[in-house]
Image (tube, rainbow, N blue to C red; front, side, top):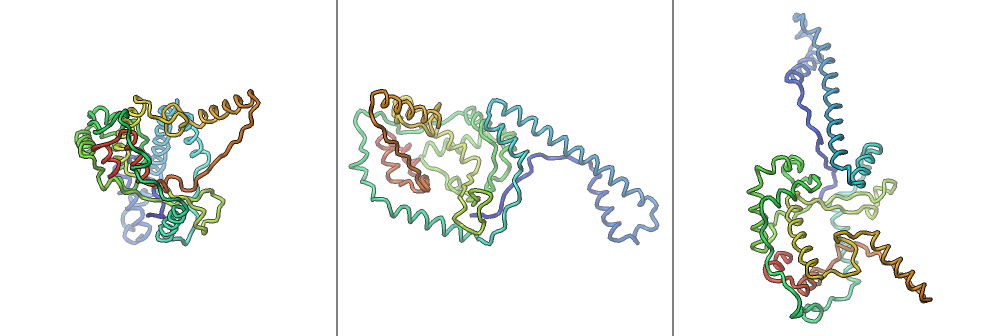
Length: 326
């Protein structure tokens, strides 16, 4: 777990070849002027440095402009991405608040929090009584290997966010992905064939982030953990997610009331469904009671045995089930 922030340069400036050399010489001249008394050309180094600094500043401005022009063009059809871009420009995040909390403090707090919540749950029923697969249920025994073209399409469609676990920035990986494609495809297909997720893909860098900027940074309960996964692990997850979604859709195994994490569904479809049912009940002069639940640490407290049992009841078996179990 890391508490320090992580960032990387979004644009790269190729400066003039003599910029660093001139700057180094001028700094030496300032620190040891007696070494340059007999060199008349030294008096011009300050002027040369000013010119190079001005040129360098123009290069940076030009690079930033090109960078954001490209981001605006690629995000033109995505209002959420456009909003995030403008928000980052108009309201840039400030420096992190000082805190004496350590990585060990956060690890202990989050571990104990999950344990306390899980202790309040009743023990889940065994798989033999809760989620048995019916004979009429279709099955998915093996995840299909994917072609290199499909992997390349997924790589290019992913948001190029970079995790500290990534050896190179994700944007750079997307640029050189055609050269690395055979190796990436081999790793992904090996995972799908043998039903095993590489151990290195299971690692995450956990970053504690204040829930709201105005909260007390010394109160550990005011933080929420954000897990950063490596870019390649997300590519593998996307491949499996596509196959699982297709299987559930083709066999009509989706819960009809599900709106989250479902293609063509969102909070809007959930609100429309609830509103429609309320109007239908009102038109027939029936009373309605709406109960809203907010689960604390919902994803962190999912029982893995129950989840795997549910997958088995949906016909996921063989090496496909073993992939999820790994």
